[in-house]
Image 1 (cartoon, rainbow, N blue to C red):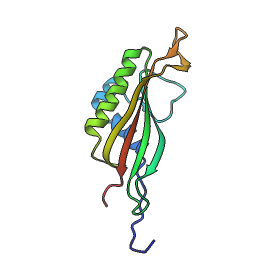
Image 2 (image 1 turned 120 degrees about the vertical axis):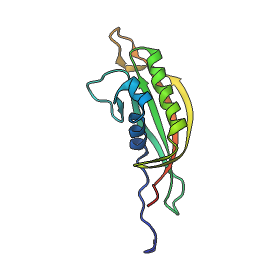
Image 3 (image 1 turned 45 degrees about the vertical axis):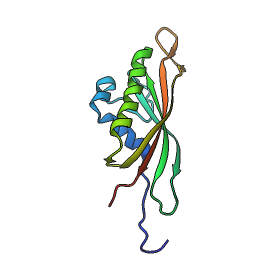
Image 4 (image 1 turned 90 degrees about the vertical axis):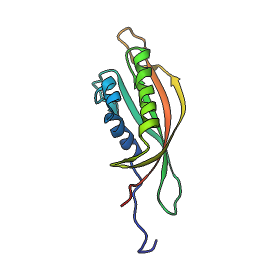
Length: 146
């Protein structure tokens, strides 16, 4: 590294996506501010959980961009609202996220899948696994210009 190289931190893509989704009226109409990166002990449904499962820098010279895989999990007491939450998140990311944000700039968004996977570790009041729809989003991002 020379003295003319710029020191950069890559964006916190998980926080960027969670903050972005919390700022969208279509999402808050469904879940209020319940776009979480950690599930709290006291839950209200529906909610969306955003978890970063992988992160790969695009290059090491220059240290500039990252492709982060995020798992989006939508929980609700019935299947349809959970699907609506996850599909709203996918649509918002695909249509509006590719722009500059406080945490960094999103340059590309893709999705790997959409699956219905009830969570057997969380039971409904009827004793059934909690409905959950899951998708994986790959977010390409880089630091904002200085």
